Amino acid sequence: MRLPYRLSCYALALTSLFAGTARAADSCLVGISMFTLGAPYYAAALDAASKKAKALGCEVTTSDGRNDMSKQISDVEDMVARGINVLLIDPRDPEGLVPAVNAASKAGIKVVVFDSALNQRANYITLVQSSNDQNGRLTGAWLANKMKGQPMKIALISGSKGNVVGEERRLGVVRGLTEAQLQQGGAAGFQIVGQGWGDWTQEGGLKAMEDLLVAHPDINVVLGENDSMVLGARKALESAGKADKVVLMAAADGQKEAYRLIKEGKYGTTGVNDPNQIGTLAAQFGVQALQGKLPADQPKVFYTKPAAVTQQNVDKFYKADSIF
Image 1: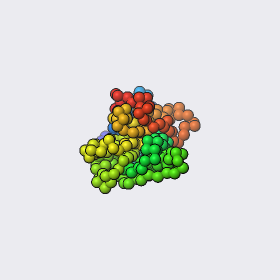
Image 2: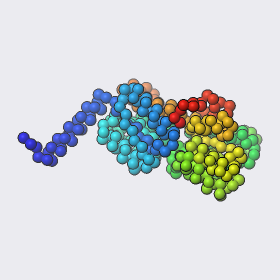
Image 3: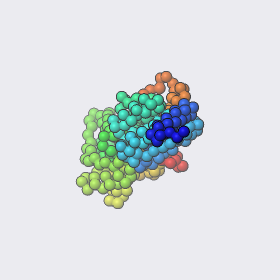
Image 4: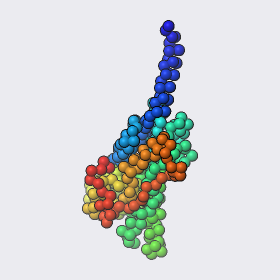
């Protein structure tokens, strides 16, 4: 007997729902939600997380939020509807993604946040990231020792407004710089002459630096919140004939192009923020949680080991074949 159209649709929906539930119960399907793939770091983190999840026997589905919070929320909702049981998320906004993450957790999905911060009132298992504060302090101390009392006119190139990671990075550098200056001579002083917004990309860093140079041609330090933006800023400085007159540094990342320049003495320092390590750990923790094997004392925030990469130690970190 043929069912009425509405009843047929309802039956089909129920069948799909129970099929998804069965799949979630006896398999591992990992969803990886990136807020952007607009810089090499994010592509490397996605690649590492995908490879680790697959190595652990899971199917993987991924999404690129294209730096649009609404799209990332929609991406997460779509993954939940498709039956994922592990969500790894690099959130665009520390507040805006909270409801989507909480809805996923309520549906029984194991959620691990990585790289960017999410408000801890969100219901996730753990956040995996480098210590932005500690990396910032170490790179800030390096700058104080590099300048040794010389006047500093710093151009600050930030990622995106409201991003907690960027704020932690720049404030970490300021703390490290201030403390090191105080230890050197009992006084601290420097100028941040302008702040540009580079949206975490080389193109954004280039444009921000061009604008900052027009307003402040006497800049002698460029501080970026990631390497991609500083590499873009360096192109602007080269075009202006000032690349050898400005100290370049990033609060974090460790992009291989930056490492090469550090080896050559053309780039000062960057903090270690290894996307391979962070992506791998995020996938490992998510799958362990699904399998009931995550240690009971797993911290809400898991930090990787901080370091300031300089010409003296760059060979320990540089990998020529790295994606990032």
